Length: 161
Image (cartoon, rainbow, N blue to C red):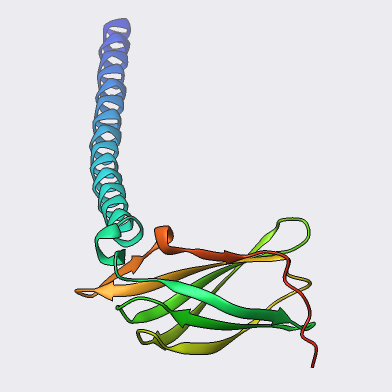
């Protein structure tokens, strides 16, 4: 009876071990399914939001800006920017490029009414060779970044006074 009792105990221990592995794998599968669904819904929602914000050219037909004058000193970039179209520009995104084409991104809140000109001062680091200015507006509380209405200026000089 001693040998039969040992076999009986080993068999129960093997079944308990197998059951714990099955339960562990089932738990991992359930957690993986929940994580997959959450990540998929999160990224698709974020992608749609970015598409609405950055690629919605629908609100950009009547927006436009121009850089009338530009110069820099050691710390600041000065620009006279004019709204050339019929929609109010609410923000400007600046990409400042140095001699090595390394970008600095700056963003400024502004209310630039149609046909109005504003002096914009941007704090910078180092010498800025080129600048790109992207207008931003809002349509039904959705931010619209008008990449297709970007303006640029190359070879920026120093201010004389």
